[in-house]
Image 1: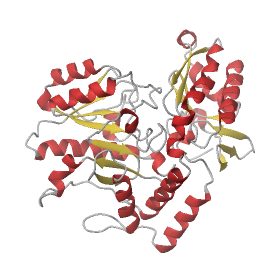
Image 2 (image 1 turned 90 degrees about the horizontal axis):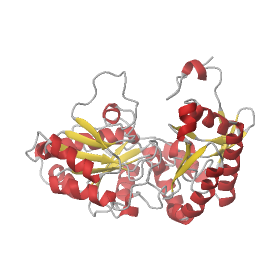
Image 3 (image 1 turned 90 degrees about the vertical axis):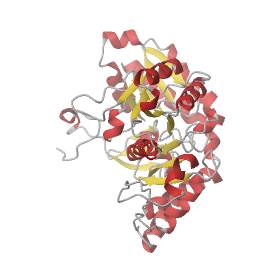
Image 4 (image 1 turned 45 degrees about the vertical axis):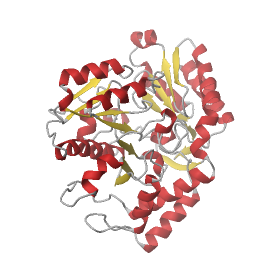
Length: 412
């Protein structure tokens, strides 16, 4: 029996059937029985430099001995928070961007949406508070993130954030029509993932993101790129938006910024959006969290960025993506398989045949369990599972994932 309530879990089934991970090294983890798993989803899309890196541990210990943390409210700061914000601002697509630090991805989405609404209000358009997102979108489980989900995880919580709507994930025409339906003078922001992650791994059609951004620009709608999964190497660049040559107004990040060694996230704010708060006194963003800019978390992030840069892991996904996708696509020869989505960066959706799911709706969940039994730790999707391993993976280990998943399919 356990007192730990697991996320996204049917605790009546999980209680007594936990898988306890006790050790990690590189792309592998081990449970308390000694069973080895290849980390097929970088834990929850975050273990970008792999497990057991001593450089991060050393940086964390050194910082804790010096100063565990001090807050960043009002005039206060700490050296690591300032250093990290400056470094991330230097990665932004627009010079002179500013950085708000948070504790994770969900908190970053809350921050970005609140800031977008406030920006319009202080610019004289307080009626702009509607948020448009996309089908299949996942933006965390905080209040605002839940409100703009494009997945069926909103039911039962009662009233959420008002004035939100979702459009088809791949249609700029649908976005234009929705803005017109709501009223262009009422829409604050459009929130999107460059490549949809937890919602199924959907790569945008060619030209779609350019067209969607152009729609927003025509109507004065802020563009918010949720790069919590896409950033820090997952798509082969620092933030993920580089692959599409985008210049969003707000960019949320988390996960890979520390490779999960400690929790940290943030929002990159373009100069035009930051200007009303920075250029003249009297405008305050009344928002912040206790652990925003936590010195030890920032030290972990700085060390992680050093590893990503020094070993050029930030670009490794571009080198591997074609072979990665081709290797996993070999699974489509199995009669239970539908397709392998992806092809951009080191992430893929291994999807079962829709007819097979219609015949047995429990199949996706059983596939995830069978993959675990076969030694692949991964994350289930509504029609299969996600594969997004640490960036240090070798092609031989990608083939190992393929073979273990093939065995899981045979078991099913």
